[in-house]
Length: 124
Length: 124
Image (cartoon, rainbow over all chains, first blue to last red):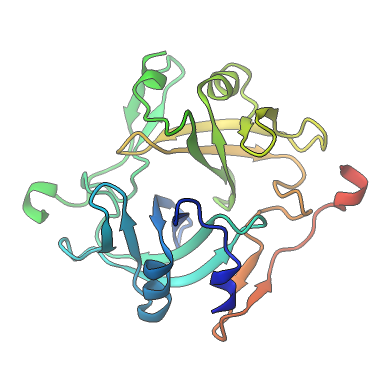
């Protein structure tokens, strides 16, 4: 696939922004290598490369919280992707819908503003 | 600032997703080092670290297309930020509102779906 060849991977990886296709909420940022990107395109389910576990990873493999691909977008520099998805359950392993569940307050503290959509202890 | 100390920078940098605070459009992804993040918090205007030019960079310095900070969010792993901004002009140096102006078609070609909001040749 030519468009994948044209992408600029760094150390074999490209960052991907995941966005809810309905309300445009940013859910998470993860990394794909070429293999996981091809798998994502073929299966229409998001696959990533885990930098800590050093392996291919189907999002939702354990939790069932898969991400169905609704649209793939490429940025100007071809070194970042945006994927709009239908998110089942929550994107965050901490139990939240979005990984960005904490907001900086005017007093420069982090405040949890996200709501838990599942209990991680029951899921993982 | 404790919350900045707790962030996990990689090679001194942290990726940042920029999102339109009104319609939640993802505008771009860029990188900040500690200095540019502190500048961003202090001035409420997004500053980045340019990996190619190896220097601090105020977004909109040349183009006038600044980004006013409306909210800063931290992810679960503390290795990525989401900043909601008021974007003046366009975020993309190619003249588009968003850097993600190309979409993958069912035939696996990239199609430009974004609209130009300025002429880069007149701005840069």
